[in-house]
Image (cartoon, rainbow, N blue to C red):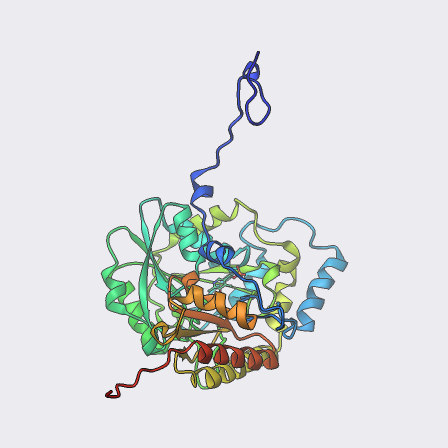
Length: 426
Ligand SMILES: *Cc1c(COP(=O)(O)O)cnc(C)c1O
């Protein structure tokens, strides 16, 4: 009698049918999912759950997109003119609108410098893919957005982490960064303003970063998805503006600034005044034919979205995040076992944990698990960003929620604080 395999096929049929998956699929691991899915996150049933973990500004309902932006898309649906394919790298009108808006005198852009993508994630994927082969390496920030490593590893590119310095508002340790460069280094990824740090780099620091890349002849991939999101008294500078004489791929998109991450519209800008990136520009256009570009409806609405969103809309988001940062920093810097680092932009704050001052808490994973179990407040352990003993909070949450959450975090830390042993004589 023919033996049955576990999926019901008999040896007479030729035996079991095994379908393996590709190396790329196997190597695609987003550490945030791996860590968060393994966390024990049962809340305290007596306290309402507050999540300070969700990096989606729409999650809390208090920061809706601009009415104008929504109606621009609605109009494209209604008029029926945008149901077909666009050029794979983006429609002329959409690319021109973005190029015009993001041009600066130092780093001018035309529509041929723009490739549209499926979100800034898609843009980063194209930028990394166009520059690297298996066995190459790229440099990424630590702590940093976990997608960089995920995209690199999937194509067997090594992601080498360079250190950021919390005591210097998360500036890059440039000696450390430069020491990681070798002949297989194909790009340096810089994220400004930063997720998870909320840092906004000074003009001088950006110049210093660019100088290393210039000297070592490595292109920069500048993730500027939070472009312009700088708090009062801080100014955002794009990398291309600061370093117009060297090759830079700038990645960005609508997600965070326009508060519509689900619309999946991003872009890569090729900044290249000296024709170093001619092949890369061509390569990006080739890669864009793999998925034929992002949604045509959002592309069609893009000129209106980009040109007409009032400055007041952006100011409101920044004001909110800055106020929330002020509340959180004020409450948490009073807690002896915590070291919050005041952000100067984007939507996040990182908070250090002095685990030696706490009882029963050895690391950020235990901290966030116990905080959820006892106080129903959920924060992301910074191991998600390869940075243990910190946690990240999101600043988009409504203000009353932020106050309550931070008070609970404070109570939690006081409750777990190790009693200081006085060196009294007996
Ligand atoms: C959210 C985020 C992205 C991804 O943006 P999408 O447009 O939603 O793909 C990229 N980089 C950083 C640093 C982010 O925080």
